[in-house]
Amino acid sequence: MSFLNLEQLPFVGMSYEFAGEKQGAPFSAYIVTAKPGQGPPLHTHPYVEVAFTLEGCATITVGEETHEVNDGGIVVIPANTPHRFVNTGDATLRQIGIHASPRFIQTNLA
Image (cartoon, rainbow, N blue to C red):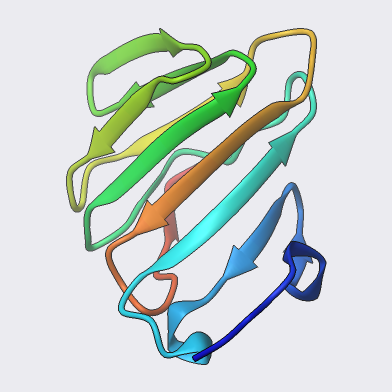
């Protein structure tokens, strides 16, 4: 059992990183705090990811589809599907990306 505070997690780029394998959990998560214009490059994972938008506005591309998501938006991203998001709002974007893997596996495409 682990009890953690968000600030105890590594902060890389624009996200706190919860690596499940280090915490005895079967999943991992990025806790995103992206500034306007920020977002990762187009990439894939060999597992499903679910992105929960808590605050802000983002444009998310999954495969050939692009949608705007706002507070409360949930996007299910199939395994091996190219995807990315960018904060298209004027405030901080807060998202949680749940990865169906105890460790992060990401292949950047751009």
